[in-house]
Length: 563
Image 1 (cartoon, helix red, strand yellow):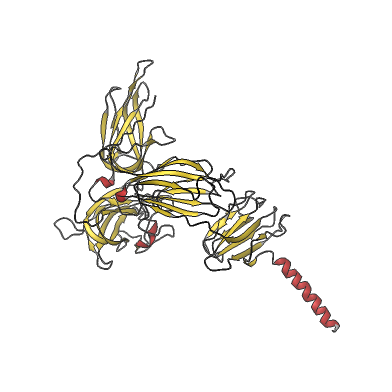
Image 2: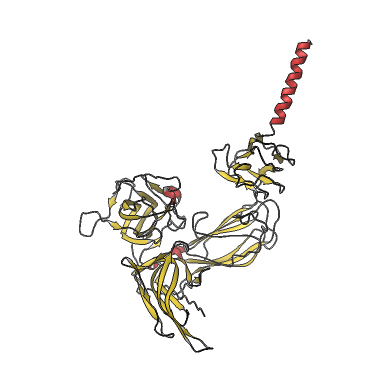
């Protein structure tokens, strides 16, 4: 071998060695067995100015990837602006981001939804920590455990209860009740792996039970539970209650056992619901779900010790759909001042100017005798107490995202599938800005012919601005091509429906009943900031009959004693 050839080989070997060292900062990884990737020089301080990207791939189609961060996690913590690790649920940085992490608290385990995960590490030129270590492996699922429950009562429990549940569970329990009947679940025993040191904003990162009033991740969220934090009693009002059980590959506990029942009416309509005072306000009541509120009854009391008379002479009423956005009841353009009591013993019932939809009711005393002492009842009824007025699935998720479409959308966070009544504060908004809008619409496909009796409409908050629809038309179709617009009675003119008066309070607009598969809402006028719409479709199955109206308006027995 010539000397020149030898020098070439030596320099080539040095180049390969340098490339191998640099390759620790990123690269493509195909999993053959459980292994580790780390930030450069871990557990020593990582170098400055790093930009490393690893793409982890499962060996076979259909497999998922599980990554676990070593608890010794140390990245500069300045709101993750300078040094951070990002995880993407796919093959590159355009995939959905799972999370962005920094500081000294290791992220919880992450499971991919497909066969690839991307991990990106960035450091700047200043402060450096020890970095991170990730163990990656193919995610091995636990036993199949998902079930649907339709019996009027039954028992729910984690697999193997009362023995310890298996690792890597992904179970979904769904209880389905007819005609939006209420579902009541009482937990007798609850013990899942606790999360004792969660970072701010995190809850139950290892094993947990999550509950929705409706379909998972679509219906109103009830809660996420772990440790010995039992849900206690849970009530669903949409006719669908969903539970998801998620466990990791480490510590197992006994899990939970619960009894459920589908609540049948045993008392007159409207009397069966007993609301709970809502924290933190002593004067707020959570009705549990959206209800028509028609009146408030108030009463004072006499002190047993001093014999003094206490009662509220006047008050205002605030209503809310979510417990955060409150709207004061108005009469005309002014806030209504309700007449209270003249003595501590008699109940005084004051009616709202019109039945109003709300879940939360708040009483604000304005004048009183001696001091504030208040006992009160809220009177009203459910939307389903009206003929053929069951919610058809926008709230519960029974209507899927694929069944909701629109003529356009103006914001990625305000697409058609976000237009679900009560869910979040966003909704749908179209591209048009000039009013009245021309042929702007949102459509719901019910998949089969049903009787539609009305729509519930609600506005929202878009970029911190209150937006809602003020005027609209409604169309319906059996085939999705030819639409008939609802017309004024005994007229050929399209009916112009009044919309909302604020962004939070839902409004019911009767439209039928009409036999249809497709229903469209055409906004015409809205707030100056644009249209904002969340909705639900009311109706019933086609059975040839429509029930007679109920005579009793019903009432909610909600007593709050404040001495």
